[in-house]
Image (cartoon, rainbow, N blue to C red):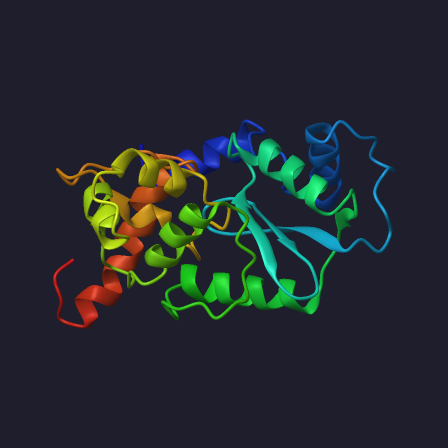
Length: 217
């Protein structure tokens, strides 16, 4: 099955449950065990659904930083949103800040092949070790992949491959922190919360930049 057909099937089956503002509100309310009218009108953290070639993504921004960028069907999303709800003492709702527009533009430019880089202020919610792994991931150029073992060595934790894998999986700013570029030592695609079909799409999409630079993909 091609990725395009799979994505169409997901939409047709109703899997993309956050594709409209009303659906997003209902879905987030259910994840947080709240009523749909329980959200503040001018929240400090604002959720916005973004339409992408890979399905709806949810961006969570305050007026300074991006806190979350996640596929709406990721299983970990309810847990991630509950964590943000606690961090913001419930001051979470829907809408945009100017930063949301920047995120949307840069994400579209990346997914449509116009640029390989992001320039966005990020809030990294995790342990010191997790943040170290995420920052290392952000040094990987588009079109390059790395094994979990090599990533562990890069952060000076050669014996902590499993911990590195857990930190990779805990990333809640998809694509911009490119956890999809981490693969098995034998080159197999493994362990992507957004689904392996998306991981494959992203790696194939990014190969254009490495090829254009005359490097190895």
